[in-house]
Image (cartoon, rainbow, N blue to C red; front, side, top):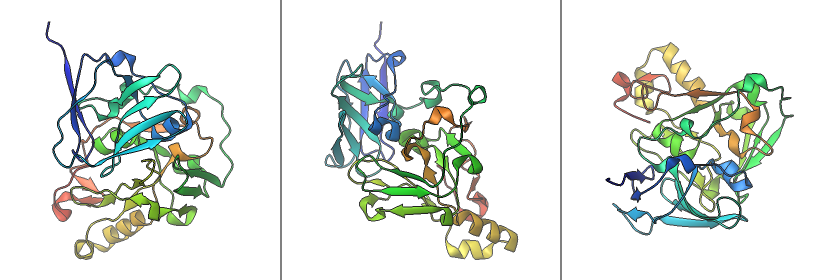
Length: 274
């Protein structure tokens, strides 16, 4: 019987690997402070990964928290592997969010929010990356904004669960401690803490100004409204338990992202993907 070989990579492709003999039924989450913010889906490693690096072997960064030491790509911020020091996940683990053709919604299962009766958190709500060098304060309740999660390639790897308030409702500090990451048309930026690799917020850049100027006035106004948004990863908010909140999941993969970005049709903005 041929052994199954799974392939995975960080988002930018600096680190590509193969994993043999893995049983994804053993995938689980960890409730420690770091993993709650990072959103990793961990699979214990019975064999080591076989790396097939395509770029610079020095693009790996490490971070040690109270419960684990992890490795992440310092270009795109994707967490790849870790070693847990205690608990049921003790030992080497791989983040299955890196695996190709994997739908994280099949493994990150939460109770039906409609069966829960949870009071909304009081505002303002503080949050931070794990090491505390990047901080956020949300001045509006996430429930007023709607919380969304999808399974496109970047959000799968970042474990992004977003709220989308206006910039006036968000206070960010420590942005100088982040590494921004963009790809394709670079309409969005996906910064992460350079120390701990946690994604606290996104940057919205939008299409170039010359493209915006060619649009009808109504669409220009729509783009300006979109660019006034400050996306926040609700995973990093203090005492924010995802299962206690109504998170809308969009189970479409990358479908649809090739036709519109920030409300701008590809025909006007050029090809892109998420």
